[in-house]
Image (cartoon, rainbow, N blue to C red; front, side, top):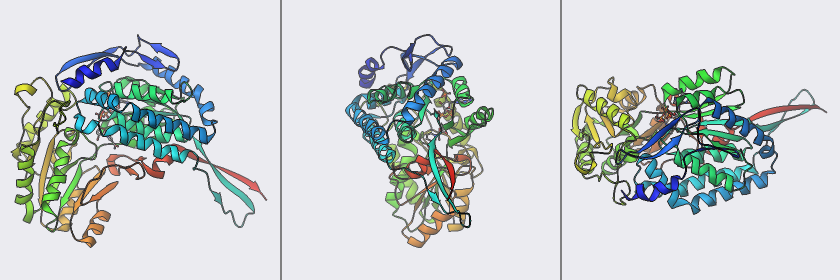
Length: 486
Ligand code: NDP
């Protein structure tokens, strides 16, 4: 496992850096990080507890006036330098991302350039955002808005792609003059810590970005801290409830970017080979651990067999293995616990669908890691756990429908509403279904992923916040209104 050897030296000394302070013993204790591909420990990780969170927020608050008052052209240039540093350290960041969660280098090698683009996009907004002048007729008055930063943003991020999460958070939060404390998952501390070092190196004031890896207690302390101006939470719906209740103590506003059970609708008039190929990504991309993966494949009954044949034959040829090998398409799931949980869902799933592919933990050379075969259940009961719960593993549930109305009804028959995928060659149907599905984003005939200029987020229990585009920028600004009689 070449990446493990190559990247371990990059992790450096365990410790928390909070502003100018280096903390090696903390109230959050220490955990051993485990490489998902081998099950072996890599390095100890010092975790923040409530007292380190308090120090982190105090530090970021102290840095706030200086960063808010930094001229916007300088803010822009610092963020552009940050983006350049991400590109300069691309191999290191990609190796760390692979080591952190076992994502294949085939994918992690693409991430730094994309992350840098997110930062550049928002650097571009730093000197362009302003307020509005508002008509007050019949009162004669000059009325305008000032868009102001919140102060300290509390960013709580999941483990499933810290490189992207950090870029998507730091770009808009910093461009708008906020400072930020980020709590990455205890499972994934390395990339976020390294990204913060690069941000500081790019010229940010000390304390403008503080990264404090920690467990749930650290997240609770951060979301409930009175010094936080806004919480930006990305993670699961269950944790979101806890975050909301922590933030309720001080009525701190919260943006939520949550999970999904995204439908993948394939109509009878679609390009079936292409649709099956795109549907495959719902299982293999990030080993099924992506928030917007299309994990419910809804297929018109006339093309069910054709789609399943293509899908299953391609999945059986998918190369699972060493994430450091350029040929590996699919890596492990993140942890032993995740592996056991997903295998439990697969086991129970045999009661509510027909297992047509996968279903097992990988053996042989891969047995020490947390590898699960890409798994497909056909003819799944729409009310079952397989069709309703976010499994966050390589498991696809296939359900058939008889007509468009039934397809849309099935697509919406979940408490989530993050992404939706529609395959059809009928333009009117594409528009009709895109309007009818309850989702924050709809991809028609393809899945190009997320882009910095495009807003992305959920409806229903997939959250309320947006990343990307102007909507993503506005998450970090609040309008103040000024009246001047004339
Ligand atoms: P979790 O909800 O388990 O954790 C998210 C973050 O919250 C982690 O840093 C976690 O720390 C922390 N946390 C845990 N408990 C608390 C608490 N009580 N108070 C405050 N913070 C807490 O999600 P996962 O990390 O397992 O990530 C997977 C989820 O994230 C999926 O549902 C996925 O769909 C969603 N997601 C959504 C995205 C979007 O853009 N909509 C993007 C990526 C993922 P720790 O891990 O150390 O416990």
